[in-house]
Image (cartoon, rainbow, N blue to C red):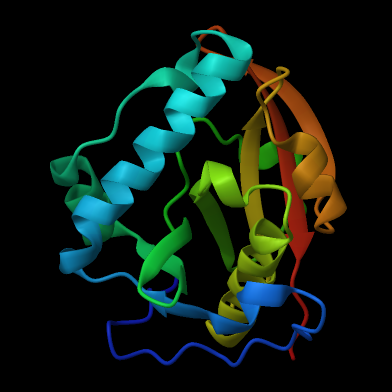
Length: 192
């Protein structure tokens, strides 16, 4: 395992061109601080409520608390996207393998990182913001350095598998973990 970058770890510059993205020209990325916990909890809860409204109750239906966000921040690097002062997206990167991931499905690498807890403001979904956040996560992983980003998505209508495929992740397997159908994805990271 590799050590996660500390709070002072600089984010690599976003290499995507922001032309034609309108208000996303003000989009900035940073690692979350404890002061972001209320906004992160509200964002994750809003996404859970939208998924529940659109697809019915499921494993995605849980509200998120500030305490849960802070616990996540103790063990993971939480990347946030802001438009001005408004937190509009987030994801977590971690070196410790999550419980639902079976490494046998993935390309053997020495230094993988795992992408968890991705959320984009429901009013900002389908605008390109999520893709920019994933590209920033790839840049962070490349600078870490990591050799791959691994993740799972629900194998259900509410799952984000199609989104991850459009972001350059490759499907590597389908499993059922504790009655939850999942799709595994990976993106191999080359040195920048």
